[in-house]
Length: 189
Image (cartoon, rainbow, N blue to C red; front, side, top):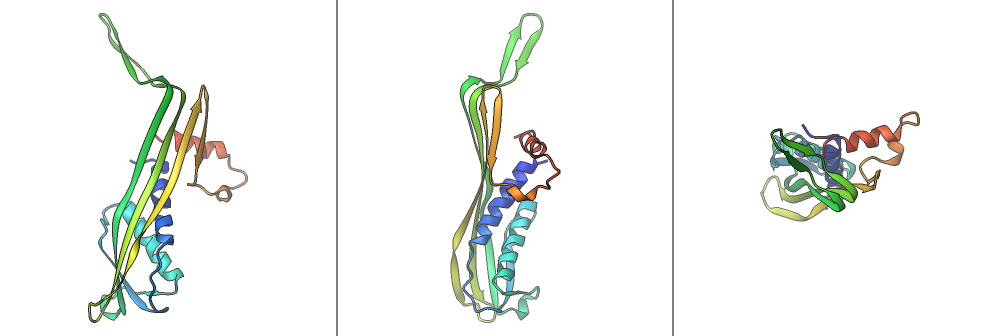
């Protein structure tokens, strides 16, 4: 099971990529969203499809479910929807296993005195638009890229995070921001 941080990294990157898509069709055009080149078995891909559908609707296109009634087919493909991790330890010790005679090994967890853990969500979405009746190419939209970030910094026993995953105004006034940060950090990344 993925952590909330991982889910937010992927969905935020998908939102950012989808928001950059410009379809350049006549407004109020009836469009069919063809998702055959998306791996729809992934909940992340399904979220990305929804973000693209949102953009179509925001740009005043009529998204219809019947391909036969469409003016244009918008074929979308997913080039990437993944997370990169860069864990840097400038001062500290990695996980160790210390052998103890006649007792076996004692594991010693990683100790970070100075370091950071950077996670970056990346999404790449490509779009081809063709005429629904004649099958002629209308346009190929430049691939849209979206990025999201989460960083945890550690200096001695202090740690803090920086991210673009949760907007500042998303939390209720009575909720503790520390609780949200702990849930993101302790999620197991």
